[in-house]
Length: 201
Ligand SMILES: Cc1cc2nc3c(=O)[nH]c(=O)nc-3n(C[C@H](O)[C@H](O)[C@H](O)COP(=O)(O)O)c2cc1C
Image 1 (cartoon, rainbow, N blue to C red):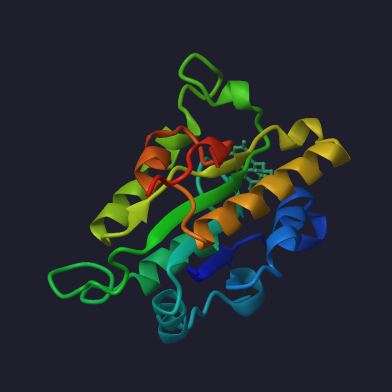
Image 2: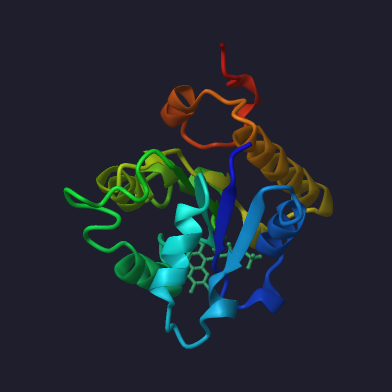
């Protein structure tokens, strides 16, 4: 079984609806570790060695967060700036992350139709997360498209929250148990609806 690290970033958890539901659905799964960045580092003083050791101890690294200004909450940028050191994450000798899997689990206020070429935002979520894809490549990570929950501002029905949470849980278990074809997943727009992409042996 693969080990999964969720770097969780939400600066206002008490007001979160969907991220907390997603997190609650997966945090007790065997081989899943939730690393709550804002809880651990309220002053942004990130413990680089601790974070690097966590990454080294896991096979799949997830950044779970609400979409803020078409990107991540601020602490995730700080995490990248500090933790991904030359000689550890990238560079000739920097192979600590090589071969691990990386993806984002994103929730957006805007609905899915906004995140289309001809929609309000003019870019898809796969396109808007390109800096993370490029970062993953530099660090020799296997990048997967984001798992997304859109349309949070419209208000999700309890059944929708439950459905997304169940899908997130099923996705993590399938990845943990190496049941999905990662190459095929990479071609998808999102990681959602991946039950059709089983690994053929
Ligand atoms: C500072 C800030 C920036 C945001 N930027 C975006 C954005 O760029 N695109 C978007 O669709 N929603 C944006 N939102 C809405 C959040 O993504 C949305 O409230 C969140 O995904 C809901 O998740 P939660 O219930 O776990 O808080 C923003 C919200 C805040 C507070």
